[in-house]
Image 1 (tube, rainbow, N blue to C red):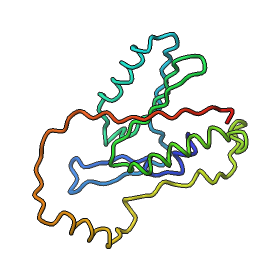
Image 2 (cartoon, rainbow, N blue to C red; image 1 turned 60 degrees about the vertical axis):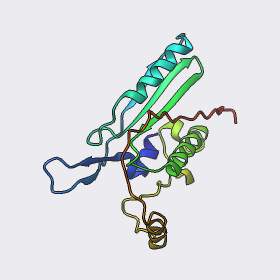
Image 3 (cartoon, helix red, strand yellow; image 1 turned 90 degrees about the horizontal axis):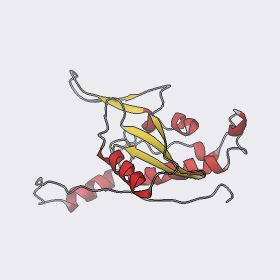
Length: 173
């Protein structure tokens, strides 16, 4: 996980805006986001579900921890791996790329020397798209401007949305 975080500035990003003329993005050099390990072996499924629900209730701090990883051990060889992040860090497509990269690195740890504390290059260590520094595609910008022309924005309370997905994989694959 550390090598993936080092390769992706979005995963080391926080934001500052207090007492500043405008918000700034700060990329932390050697700082890992929190990784919370919770051992719940033997716990009833309802208790685990309640804990998972509590994760979604907890607020993220853009200034300190807009990204948190959770590893919850439910059984001897059964874990939940939860990535909770603020949508300002990266988009849904990048989320899937991150998950693929984590699974790839886990399944090939020996091949890349990670099991021995070494680190060989991996094609999966490439960075996620950086939407902050990438130049906007003006054709896409114009498309959306035209698409929403005449639209009057309004605010309304959003219902509580809980988005989650479950990916099962085996180290034997």
